[in-house]
Length: 583
Image 1 (cartoon, helix red, strand yellow):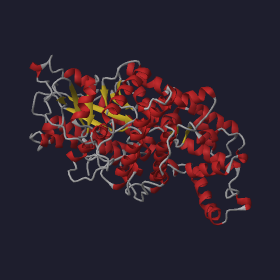
Image 2: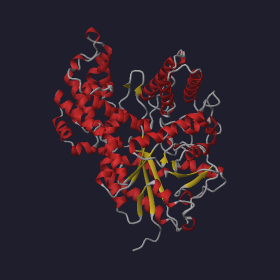
Image 3: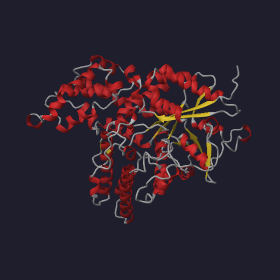
């Protein structure tokens, strides 16, 4: 029977991002999150598409993440591991490791969501209980010869390292890798040879990731978009005052502008396109601006550089409609379509996420049975479809973090994603699609008579996918201080560069270090609503990056960079790695 309404088109969009965790001076990784998410989430997300060829989705890979995945692959090829935790997994004699290496193991290897990633494994849980027994004695009585770790044997450390990495293995590895299955079954007394076997699984998994996604792309099952290279908030690079669109009373940094922000924004966009071409062999048609951060100027800049589509949050659209003196009363009427943004010369099509559906996957569905979660998702889509009284298809964009949500789901979201893709790909009235598919449908000049001309959005209210504002990155004491510190080093950078005293190699190193400092993640973590240990890690790494830039420029390091920017102390939802689209 023919459907009574036009089909509903679903853009399911998974955003993959990690900031650069390397110290460019030592060239070592300071935090392990890139390779851990690689073996857990990036691998699993590819697997679900490989397992269901009828499913179609879009992915966003931030270039600095791809660069790190490529770097890990090169480390494996050269047998020179620059990630301290990963190197310890294959350290033959754990009796001889240093005090700092012992501290790294115990500080790192219990950092996972305990309910879903530690508690299900009795042997891993036992290692935690043993540590909890001896930790007070280690703290109060530093031990013989100052060695506070004398209670923890080399075998304990070996087992802890193995279990930490086993817990971070994705469900697809647990179901398909005989090595992982054998080690999980054994549970204790892991040998050096077994640690090498696990390391080999990690090597193969990470080295094959980019080729797997490229293969999915080449058979048109997925679209892959990019992001400005080091994940900066483009509107803030262009103009701090764009903050005031959604937060009129927000305090701004003491610096009035980010010096040379226009040129820096262009550099991030251009280098992102080159990175995408390098990794995937084609020019990206779309771009996810970091954190969905848009303004009219930022969207126009992307359009000017050949980007055909972008996406952001629902609240940005609502605010933009108000700014344009258009109605935002009925979400069903305004949300489920792309809009054309133009500067009079270049156009870009902009999509807006359904915050409710996106946040349900990110924050709610992990708490209920996968079958109930999928049923709820499908019922919501079917309701949107049934409520469509026009002859124009509705386009629903569900956009969220494709990596951090899954550790809160049982089995890394395996059953939820399997059932979701199955239900979506077989539904008679729902078509899984990609953003470029929709752009092709909405070619304004070619299809005006078919009702598929995207409406123009006259005004864009600057904001992000988090609350429709930039409050996560600017507008508070700590965040504004971080911007002022960045502005100060950028002025020093500009001064040194203008003197033409740097070699080409030195200039390249300085520009790369500057680009890292411009990333959004540092500002995300500053604030008392985040956990202290996470804030401390990112605070230290941000200041280290700024210090490294001063040193690369051959300039004195300001004393303020030896003082912490933010203390944290809160208890953010989902460990602070994700934010809801709405309050």
